[in-house]
Length: 248
Image (cartoon, rainbow, N blue to C red; front, side):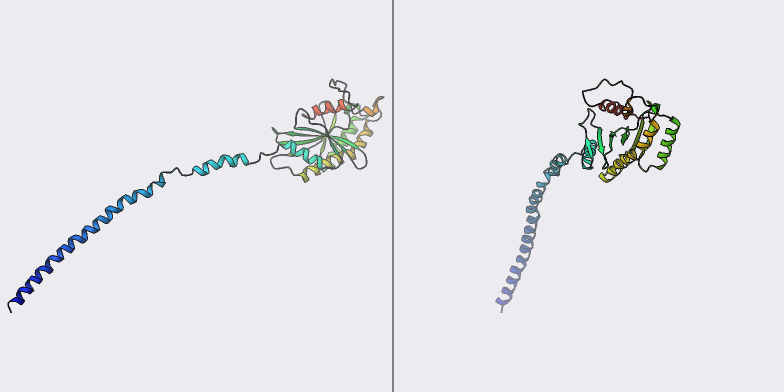
């Protein structure tokens, strides 16, 4: 009977000593977990040290080089003119913004129309000088009245008289918005139609005072020094080409 109480006391001593040991060892294992994880948190930050956006920065110049440059307007206008039936172009002048054209109507009449792009004024002007000089008119008052009435009736273009008294027909297009082929062709053919309609009436006002060379009545005073052996209309054309740069 005495052994049993002794064994029970020994068992209690053994069980009581195992509890604290377990409590001491378990916290020790938990402390090692955050300690061992601390170095791992530094490794993911290594990729962040790489320079971001390096790839897009290299793509920007390539995209800039690949972007097509806009075509100059005078080249676009030459392309338009080549598409209009009956138009013949002269070789480019020293000034590429000046385009000299010859239009032949379906009925055979021929008109010189000069197309000028003025970047400073943001304008494209179409001009024709196929009507002669006011000083050669039989009645200048009747001629001016005819031109005023024509300007009231014209849908495209208007007549004017420049500083040297040459009669011209003009129409302007603004370049703030793109000029389409349809719009350009309509204005070009409209200007040619106006020249065809009023050319004979203006010629009637010229008759009577013109001298021997009546067929050459549209020529300005003979001050051309740029003749290159071309036909007789080449020199007046060059002179009018100068005037048309600043028609008024």
